[in-house]
Image (cartoon, rainbow, N blue to C red; front, side, top):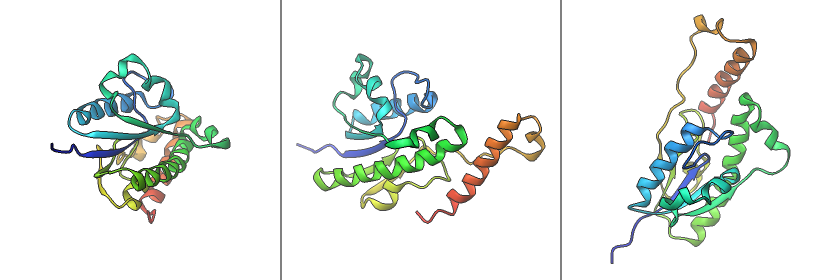
Length: 178
């Protein structure tokens, strides 16, 4: 018998239905891609602990064979998730925790490749991709956009601060040694 490939997927946001707090469009598109992959591969999916309830519902039948590993950043870091400009800091810390979980998994399971499937863009490094010795797939990828200066005046004060934080984050992310 031919062995199916076993993929380790990093999917911060994944859900069969919309999530109020955790990137609904991305969660659904990640869900759809994971369902397509499950038809051809064995999956171990590292995801945020907040997804546990959604992923245990009846709507999740297409991924019943997948193994889910739930990772949540402990302590006061959860406050960072509540403020949009700081969410990327929370996600960066979550990625380190996801990497530690991935490292434990690849030591005990046959993993053929790792795939960063959600909450990624061209300026946030993947710890799993950088430090797990497996074939690595990144994508789909977005996040390269920026607001032209001529349009910043249309933003609220908070919007301009958020955009400035994102621009600074992009610069740091693109210069991250990871």
